[in-house]
Image 1 (tube, rainbow, N blue to C red):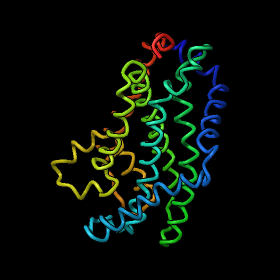
Image 2: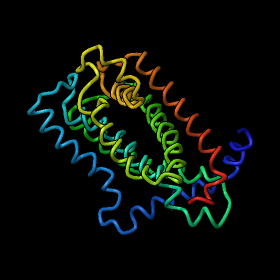
Image 3: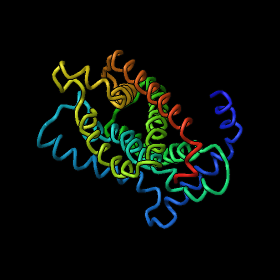
Amino acid sequence: MREWFSEVWQSREILYFLAWRDVKVRYKQATLGVAWAVLQPFLTMVVFAFFFGRLARIPSEGVPYPLFSYSALVLWTYFAVTLAGVGNSLIANSDLITKIYFPRVLLPAAAAFGGLLDLLVSSVFLIGMLFYYHITPSWTMLLAPIFVAQTVLLVLGVGMLLAALNVRYRDVKYTIPFVTQIGLYVTPVIYPVSFLPERFHAVLALNPMTGVIEGFRACLFRGSNVGWQVLGCSWAVTLLLLLLGSWHFRSTERVFADIV
């Protein structure tokens, strides 16, 4: 395993070029370009604000509901969209895999890091919303990149596992969007954790994105609280999935070229 990590590190320049290639391909014929990075979470936020904020009156812990939901959608959109790209990265690059040798893990890693451009653009809009609602961030905003990094690790861990399975079982391609769609509603994007009865908190904490979103909100909004148990459980599950995904990917990558 140590030699594998060493080989990946020595090939980091390839990772950069693969990630930049993915970004260029994604927006090559898109009229709006990177504006889609804002439009997708923004339009979703508008729908949520109307149905869940105005009609259902779901609480938002003293934060304007549009800002409350958009702050979660920034990370959730990156997770859901990028996870699909990471999961399909090996199939999408089958010609490359069968022609030359390089560490195969660079393909899912490039998809994960390439999605950070969208996250950056949507985060700039989030900062604009903070000013619009006259919310002054505190020093805790400096901790927000920790939860961004955790989201990247989570995407890598789950994505490597799905990418390796997708080579052998093509049903995975259709499962990913279905699972992420369900995951939106079992993650505190629309509602805060405090909205649910306490007996559900332990189960909700097993979803690593729960700690990510709750922690990210706590960094942005004063008065937002997040339990240390939720954060600890979130990080534990994230690291476990990262190790599991790395192990499974490493143990199966030698047959990718034969099957893909």
